[in-house]
Length: 313
Image (cartoon, rainbow, N blue to C red; front, side):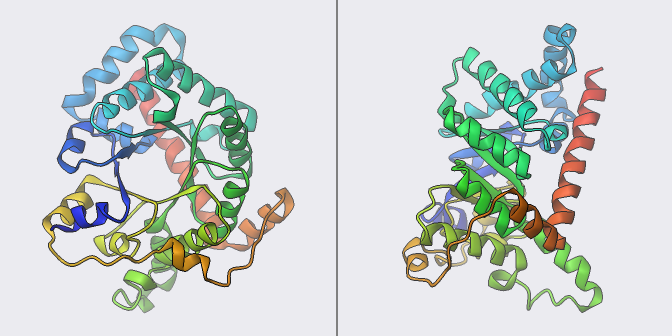
């Protein structure tokens, strides 16, 4: 059995791509997108027509509406290739505006429903800022499910659990990137691999806390740099993986062991914590890596959204 098939027995595998033609080869259950992945896709000849057709049909309604329509168009195409859910991201420029995030999310859901897609097949992706988490709490109460992204710290995960969001996406690879950059020449790749990887450790701590305290929010490790990070999280609720790494897993016959276990977590001594706005903001501020990576991630998604808008014009 190859590693991808072995992983599917322990974890729900999700494809992290806007390139829906690649998805079928790996038979994931769900798929995730973001502005950077959509930008990458529309620059390929086989997807350029989706942008052209959307602009031609809805261009007179303004940039925001064209963007919503484009994201939904990709989502609908992706849903033809997966049996489960697709994640569609709210404009990252709204990351600090609860009201605007809720409004944009509802518009995206309306467009999907107008195309006959059931609300349960959509996850609205929102950055894990305090404002984003509050928007997600409101959407969840209305039956709109959310995927809280750009998640780098334990406090973000705890606040998402309190908000009863459907799913979180802790970013393994970007945490790894930060610690590797900080260490510079002192970084020992072999010593910091697998279970010792700081990104892997972050996800494991969140997973164990959720399972220990009966928090229903799904944990989906994201943003992987290598196969070792993925195999070290086998057993996580879900893992969203790029096509390149899915191909590596599919090509490997190496044995795969379960690394995360909900029953084992329930026996652990993990204290319960919760946050209000002030304690959340302080905890996030105390975590230099998470503060920097959250800000950087929002800026990067905004930059790619602006590039997409320029292509629309």
